[in-house]
Amino acid sequence: MTTALVTGATAGLGAAFARALATERRDLVLVARDGERLAATAKQLTEKYHVEVEVLPADLVSDEGCALVEARLADATRPVELLVNNAGIGLRSGFVSNTIDDEERMLRLNVRAVMRLTHAALPGMIERGHGDVLNVSSVAGFGPTAPGSTYSATKAWVTTFSESVHLTLKHQGVRVIALCPGFVRTEFHQRAEIPTSDIPDALWLDADAVVRDALVDLRRGRPTSVPSVRYKVLGGIVRYAPRPVYLRLIGRAAKTVGRTTSD
Ligand SMILES: NC(=O)c1ccc[n+]([C@@H]2O[C@H](COP(=O)([O-])OP(=O)(O)OC[C@H]3O[C@@H](n4cnc5c(N)ncnc54)[C@H](OP(=O)(O)O)[C@@H]3O)[C@@H](O)[C@H]2O)c1
Image (tube, rainbow, N blue to C red; front, side, top):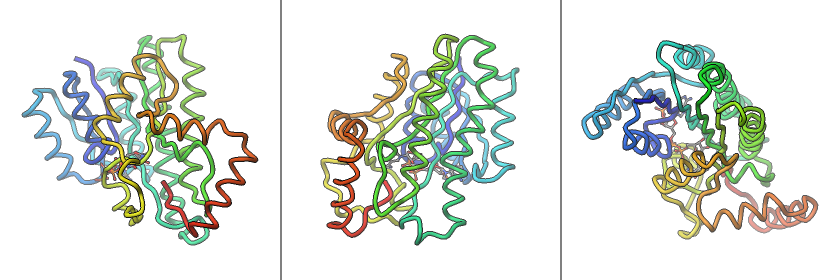
């Protein structure tokens, strides 16, 4: 059996990844901060899918938390064949209104931890001639949002980083993909206290469906995955519209709405 390591595995997309990978009969290493919730998740998965589940309680904002997971990823005696860098947070307000500590916390989790864990996992994968890294980004990373939230900037980094590493390693048997979903029903918005009542039902995606599409795209060797036709179209407009046109439109929308959420 092969082993997958999933960060943020106790809720939302991470929990959906853990379920989907257990269904494929992969052994799992689950990472999140809440040790009790991790243990409960591991117990459910072991009982239902009969796979080995290891838990690594770690705060990926901290140096120690990152180091713990990096050491597990670099352990050649227990290879990890798939790394899912999923843990991430958003912030309720725009850049100026947030505290700099909250901004730094988001940057460290959404960007720095993704970089560090990928860096720890890749040498073993390259040496073995195979391995997969799936980084959870967002359609929010396809263009700036207004008023300026840095969440979209963190996700722009994740997408560009993943695509760059994908290009570098695709001929060495290592696949790297950025998953760029739109709104997904998880704990994300509630945790950040981002209001969701104005978001139309049609824009919400189901976490299990997002994960299913992402794993198909990973196996097809694609550099990015944008689940659902809705978001392929919307994301495509944001990503490929001439930047001056997009900036004018988003600027106008910001004036009308007054504020936008960070995701
Ligand atoms: N939901 C959306 O609409 C949406 C859309 C696009 C992209 N995304 C991206 O999808 C990813 C997953 O988000 P989600 O919506 O599934 O969120 P979620 O439901 O809030 O789950 C977050 C998971 O990450 C863990 N986590 C949070 N902070 C952590 C830290 N400092 N160190 C380690 N683990 C931590 C949480 O467990 P603990 O609290 O126990 O640590 C939990 O398991 C994120 O990267 C997010 O940016 C989400």
